[in-house]
Image (cartoon, rainbow, N blue to C red; front, side):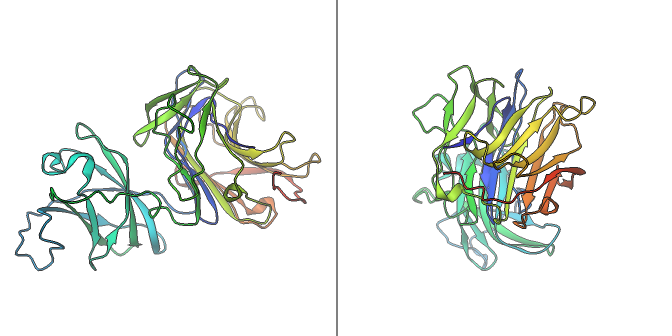
Length: 352
């Protein structure tokens, strides 16, 4: 069995390239706080509509005449060039004319400067507030470029599909914005792997609340977690490079899993928050890859306490070397000072 444990927190999840596990807004809530988890191996960026040009149909650059309106989205990122990057576009009524669109954004199209149409996923559509849309950008680099958002075609058929947005390097992407009380599995995986999760612990254990990006899940810190069936796409072994990421928020020291795939002997991988190593610094981030027998494992602990009640973006990446030096921890986009506790992993992490 595979269990994505989210007790005492709220999260969004996703598995990324090489492979990656990723969470989006999540709450760690032993007393009603919120938290969220985000992804890794690629940098998450938020792209806002930065300008609106009243361009007429006479423009030679206009994509298709059936679409009456367009906005320009300027793109720029630090670091190396990225191809096929899922960028987050945030819309509100000050930047977009919802009245000119079809319901639920069916006529949205994202087109780059070369005329290529980008696939997109609408995580949340809210004409009265913020709408969150993930767009697969063909190219993202330090050199500024742009894509166009088109809308205003009453005859257009909706084309939003999550799967093309998240390529095969993503093992799972869970936004955690669905209602936790519906038919199982409630929490949908946006990738083609369909690693959907079912809420556990009863109606009082998990709640849908506002998160860092749209809605997220808040866990009670006792019974609430998500459970996923054992799936080959979620197997991350000793020599497999991978990244786990999430947004989290809590204001209390907790000892809880963020993400785990392990058996009853704790064989597997395990990203968690732990208040036990140092009473003076009770809240730390760990990437644990335990394997039986005892001390046949890698364990790396972060130093930064995260109990300030603020949202934090936590990332753990592993290079597949079988060594603890191959583990890197990041908090809010910055390398986290860390301590190697165990560096003696010898056997497979595969869970039967």
